[in-house]
Amino acid sequence: MPDITWTIKGREFIHCNCAYGCPCQFNALPTDGTCHAVGFVEIEEGHHGETNLDGLKIGLIAAWPGAIHEGRGQVVPIVDERASPEQREALLRIMSGLDTEPGATFFQVFSATFEKVHDPVFAEIELDIDVDARMAHAAVPGWVEARAEPIRNPVTGDAHRARINLPRGFEYDIAEVARGWAETQGPITLSIKDRHAHFARLHMTQSGVAH
Image (tube, rainbow, N blue to C red; front, side):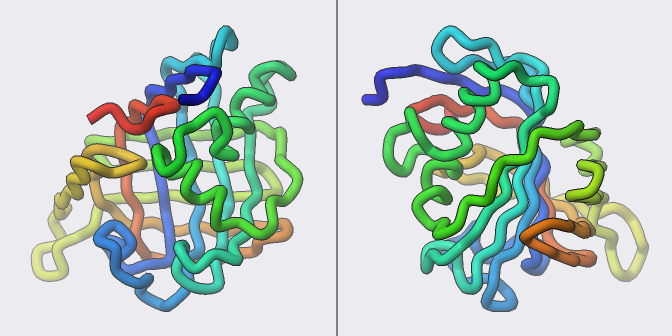
């Protein structure tokens, strides 16, 4: 067991370059053979040891040349500029998979697949996430601009709703599926258009997802 306990409760927006639904959620290979993604979390309640994390935001830009489990990935961690030095260290430890049981969270699993972790970005994170409406906007000036909206029925144009339930997942229990767009700058330059996105209410600890 890790020496330090931590908890994050909040809302998540993830967007990648796979087709709607994302084969990775089903242990299948990515749609185009590669994985490019951006992700953001707004922490409503959280702590790392004695360090309070309430109200802070985090994000990442990540890319793998193949499937995630094949490794050779790279990541840019993004941390809310409002975080104190202690909060920054705590968030980066969580995002790096430290103080976490092996395989317990997607942060820890992904950390084992990165061969390059770029310097963390401490910046303003503009983030608006509505899980039920399947709507989001995320912006980090000079780094990321991303948005998501519901999938549309190709015949009627009505909003389509689909969920993914992972009772033993390492990221969420239930996710609402949507579609998104993203442009990034910096060492990982991505341009993703009308591809998979999902939203979830997160409840994670050092031991994994609370299902």
